[in-house]
Image (cartoon, rainbow, N blue to C red):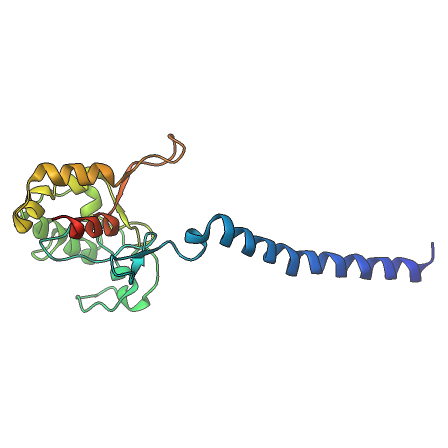
Length: 202
């Protein structure tokens, strides 16, 4: 077999593989995603009753009103503009990521235990602090809290809205996602979905 034939064969193989991996496979994945997993492929977007997109089920949002359940704190304020004190210059990034502050770092201790820290903020609102309501997630974009993190807020939300706590307990149960395949991860409550359903209650 001549060298010319070998080179020709190598070039043809390269072109075929290039067409398959650069065009056919991505196009197949795009079509499959839009047909079988349209919602997920387009960002798992959530719409309100007017059909307006209000967020994504994959990214948390900051809720501060007494009438809503609060999510996890975020070092980047879920990648939006944040005017809070930021000695560690973390919020300036505007991207996903943890603070990477050591447990002994004064900035972290102030954010958690300071006069305006997470623990005091929760206690002033009559909410028993839980780990997920005090500490940020690794991405700082986590849209979920634990069922316990939601339940400790029931009294506050029920009082602000003038509704029965039992109604909120039912709502939390309805919006609790179980473990993946029944064994992976922990149950979680999507705060945006929960608050959206809360607004729909009469």
